Image (tube, rainbow, N blue to C red; front, side, top):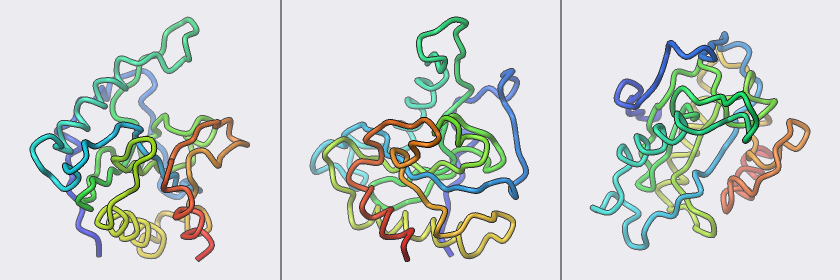
Length: 185
């Protein structure tokens, strides 16, 4: 069983936002792996002073709240909190950052039916061994020990793979090959 640190209530969020919507867990058809595209300072990967996961998540939640998710069009549509359900820090810790029932904006047309997992990882960076172990433990728990969530190993995707859902991105970066291998079993 994976240990999960629940920090949902520590993060900025706006539950009264007009676009705050929930769904039944049984509607989750995909698990989407992301990276946050913010480099972790070299040598600070495992909890040293220049890298503090909760501070990083608070900062990113504030960014997601201030961002216009309508892609520069009007009317502006601001976010309601961090748009990932789980985060994996470089030390391998798993953080619950949103309720699984919440529909977050992370994968365009897949948002309504997808669960979002994000690793703390920048472009060109490789995940740590601990981070990969945390990601694998979380995915195994979600895919094999959560019968209320119908998604399985075959439903784990990298964000940038979801072209049919309107996604065109290099995300999840260096994680993509591992995600594809995990999906294949």
